[in-house]
Image (cartoon, rainbow, N blue to C red; front, side, top):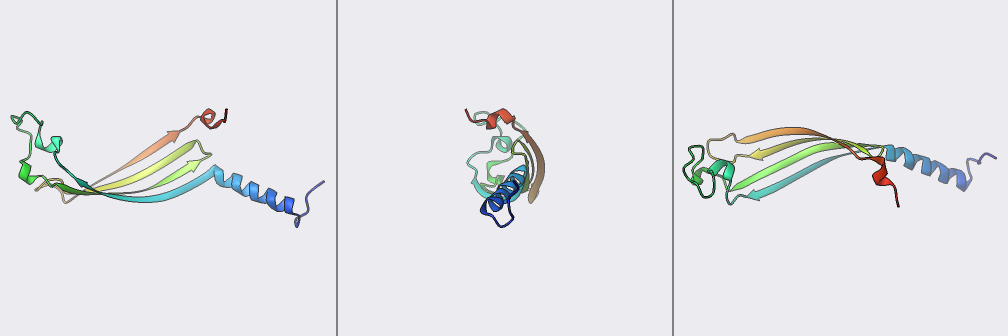
Length: 119
């Protein structure tokens, strides 16, 4: 026997169907920022215990405060497939370098369905 449209069971059934549809496809956007205090940057200043490298920047030219910003979007399909795009920016790390450095990335995550099963 079909449910009547004004019955409570019919309305609850519609709510559950809408929730199921929403679980199939979700998405969000995000923004984050951070301020980093750099004590020692071995990529720029060379090895910690070896000052003989010619590929280093003087300690007084390295910026000790670096601001980083991230923005992106997530798309989640069927709770086990995710695509993420992130765009990042970082302020100048040393004197004479670019004022801002930008990069981006795409991540694809696949989670096996068996990880969602309750034991």
